Image (cartoon, rainbow over all chains, first blue to last red; front, side):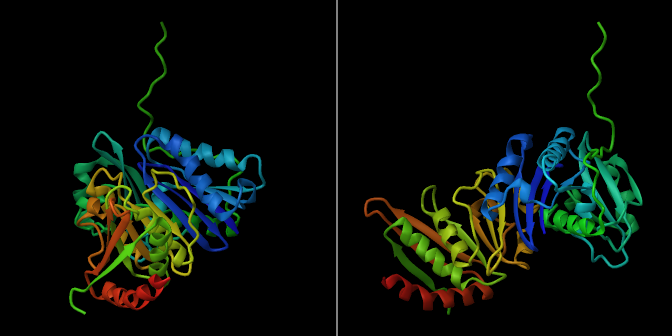
Length: 214
Length: 163
C-alpha cells in the first residue's frame, strides 16, 4: 500500500510517504510559503522512492484548522494529485493528527491546541483512547490566557503548538507526518475515504470580507 | 574509555563520505550524532555517508528548507539540518529526543539547537585545512550510549582508512 500524507495546516509543515509500511518523512518550518514548498517536498519524497503520483493508492491531507491559506494549499495539492488517478482521498482533522501522538494518556482527556492568531487558540478535546476514528467531544476557540483555567485545572493533557507553556503539556513533537499516515492507512482499510472533494476545517470565519460596493 | 577523541584525516570528499559510511554501518537505534563544522566543511557529505552506511536511501539533492527528514533503512535515520532555524522553540517542537526511540539522529548545525538536543551524543567536528586541502575530523562521546558507538568506531575506522 502506497500512501502520501500532506500537512500544511500551520508553520509546522510536513509530508510523509508510507510504502508497504516503510515510512519516509520531510518536515520543515514554513514562513507563509507553503504553496512554494509543498510540491518540491512531495516530489523529493516520491523521487527517492521511485514513485509517481499515479502509483499512490491514497493521498491523505490534514484538513485544519490552521492558517487560512496554508490549509487550502494542502487540500488543493492533495486533490490535484489524486484527481487524474485512481487514488483515494482521505481528509483528517489536524487536531486528530495532533492528539494521535498522545494515545497512551491512560484515562485522561487530551486537548489539542492550535494558535489561530489574535492571541487565541483553537482547541479540540478528545476522550481516551484516541483512535483513527476518534471524534472531538468539544471544539472551539478561546483566549490563550484562558487555557490554564479551562483545561489544566481539569487534569487534561494538553498538546500542540503553544501548549509547551502549560504545566500539563506533554512535550512531544507537534505533528509528525507518520501519525497522519497511520490514521490514513487505518481509514483506507475501513473504506473511510472522500468522494473527491474535501472541505477545510476552520475555527472561525476568515477575517477577509467581500469588497464593498462602490 | 575516559575522554577519548578519535582523530582522522580526510583528504577528499569521497573519503569523508567513506568515513561517514563506516559510522553509518556501526549505527544503532538510539544513537545521536552531532556534526559540527563551518559552511563547506563536509557535514552534508558526512551525513550522506552515514545514511548510506545505515542502508537508508537518501536523495542526491533535497529541498534546502527541509529541517527534518526521515529515511527508512537498516536503521531508520533522522537527518536534521538546523541551519535555517529561527528560534530554539522551533527545535523543541521537533522533539528530537523522541526520534531516538525509532531510529538514529544526525544533526547538522547543532550549535543552533543547544538545549534541545539529546545529551548523550557522538560529537563529530570537521575542521578544514584549506592550505593542505584536508579535513581533520575529531569524534568524541558525551555519554554512555555514544561511548559504545565511539568504541565500535575505534575498531572500525583505522581499518577502513588504510585503503
